[in-house]
Length: 114
Length: 109
Image 1 (spheres, each protein chain N blue to C red):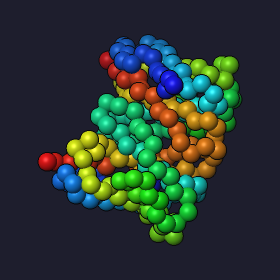
Image 2: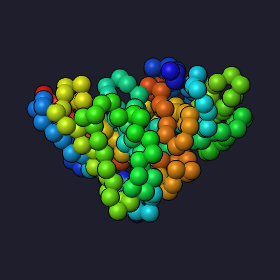
Image 3: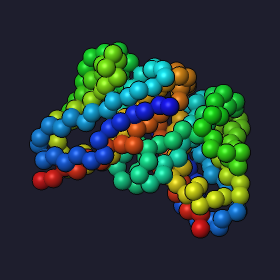
C-alpha cells in the first residue's frame, strides 16, 4: 500500500515569506508526527497529532510554527516569516496509534530559506 | 536536558560484524528505538527494546540495559547496502521520540 507522502519534496523560499508543508499519512494511521532534521543534527521532534488534536506541541521552536490536521488524515505544517535557521529537512511520520511502536516516515521536504 | 550519545562515524568491512553503541540520560524512559536512514531517504524502523536483553531480527540485533542507560545495535554479515546512518531514539514520555545525532556507518569491500 501507499506509504507516507509529503509535498513539496523541495522548497526554496526567501527570508520572511510563509511556507506550507503537507503530509499525507498512511491510511488508517491515527497518529501523525512532525520532525525536522538539520545538517549534522539528529531528528528534532516538533509536534504530534492523535486524530485531529495535538496533545504535545512542546517541540515547536517558536510561535512562527503551527500545524493542523483535518479529517484525521492530512496535516499541514506552516512556517510564517521564515528565517534562514529554518532551513532543514522536515519529516512527517505516522503510526497506527500513539501506543504503537513503529513510526513510518515520509521522504521529507527539504526547505531552503535564502 | 535529555542526552543521547552515539559515535559520529564507524567503518567496517563487508562480511564483518559491527556494534553501534548508544548511551542515554533522559528524564524518563518508555522504550528505545533504532532506525536506519540511507542518504536522502526517510528513516526506516529497525528495532524496539523496552525490557533489558537482546532482541534478534535476522542479521540485526538490539540490546538494552536500562540500569546502565545503554543500548547497542549489532549488525552481522555486513553488506554494502548496510552503509547508512543509524539513529538511536528514546521514547521519554507519551509517544514522542528523542533522537541521537546518528552514527554514519561505512561498509567497505
